Image (tube, rainbow, N blue to C red; front, top):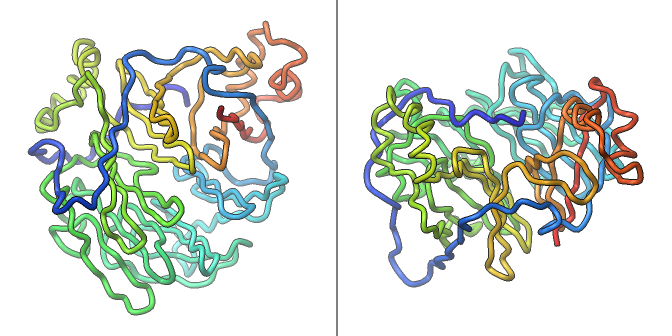
Length: 384
């Protein structure tokens, strides 16, 4: 879990150009996201305290790839191991599991993404060929045929959704057209509208992406791995803001992504790792902070941007000087005031057994009763 793979490649297509620019007027806000030269080494530099909660044993998730919170519910998705979603309430009681493996109505062999329809209060699962809708109790409601192969989906409002298809998909996997990467789709009318984007001119390799298309308030955010820009759209799908990384260190050049046979070697080259950084999207946001991830100095690194003081911090493995707990923070969710990580108990047990944990600390009191087979643990880091 701690050693995240740098990237998963399926097809590499030539990348051209530099940062896409599509400003047509002065109505688009340009927001620089500073990238510090040095990483933060102490958790207390940006965290006040830590809270631990053990998830219910009945939850059918083994590792959390993506999480969302809506009203008083947590929606936790495991795309690879159990291929299911568990819904947990604020008291950490299980509400339901969605674990419908099969090929019949309301069933799937795999799913790629999910979104919450906030108007109808449904959980909508994106599979390879259909969108399957469930209520919060896990009951199957209906399913709709997709207008092509889609990589990510996000509910906008009513029956309208924003769709994204990676340009790295093999040519046999057709989207709604051969040009666009973003569309709006109305489930009721089946109307499909292209969302113009300068990224259509940039061919990006196919790799695993998580949290690269998200909703926050009445806005949507979109980016992809390797890009140094995050695009913010209104709920009318008008581009209103572009956030770009501002660093003395250059972003890994798009031109270097051409040769798939040499790309992994280049990304693992120590000199290249010292020279460049690149984004691995993990877009999370609340009213005061924005989060994503990147490869920096060759290591998986989190970036937290404070929207109030306009400052950022970077951290990879970090000294937990608050309660002696685990030294890795792997965010999957950012709620009103907490950076949230969900870890497998075995990692916490291993750390606990190394000793030197203060007995009066929250981590010690939680971990002393854990076993490697205990349920997942939600860790809330209260931001300063």
